Image (cartoon, rainbow, N blue to C red; front, side, top):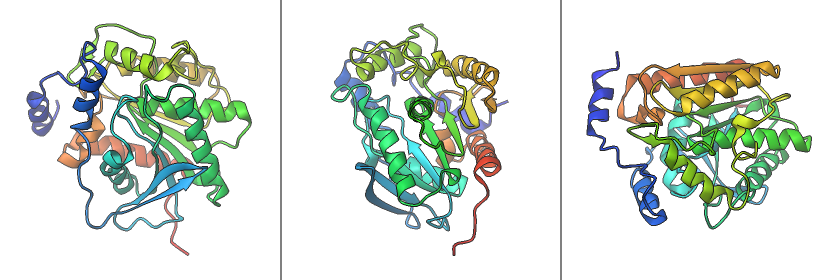
Length: 297
């Protein structure tokens, strides 16, 4: 049974966020209205570059630089909210998972289409490695469309023969941009992600595994945590990815939160217990594969 707070938030939603019939400007405005929240006074956020790509290094509270890193690929449906608008989400991840966050400020569609973003993510990761951070202290994490980018970037790096990070965490990831059904929840419609996928892919085939990783061969990838909400349409694709990854010999953990909607992790800062609990499970997964926090030297 969901908490009263979760239910009250759900009751306040009008279901209009991800209408597939919205034009690009309307879809972008709706998405950006949800972001850009201020960060706490005890959070440090500094813009820099890794691999020639603009990134923000975000550390909340007592998190110490040089400890362990989340390389974060933000959501926003590929089209909306630059990195500044997602600093609050990076802060939340830093605080809840007790890690430094490097958020990649990747280019937005449709002005920049596949494979631009994928190349930027891989360049940023290689830049982070080049700065002296060992791969075994890096976890890839992303929400919504960024959750799909976690998988596609791992696939691209594997195919390039680049050392992979310790693990990957997807929060309600978009894994099948070719799907175009009417299945929906208050924060997500499958037909909407299909439309945004067309913005992102340009002329490329939406069934390309580097666009829709549900079609991928996952052999050689690091351990994966796939979280989704129980009423989130992306949960069905997470189940497929989990099954295919496991069959490929990948250590994959499927974590479906009962009765939760798409993007429910974002309710953590509102005090929703189910959201905070999911991120605690993500932290436990990270501890097991990336190692616990280490004292600053």
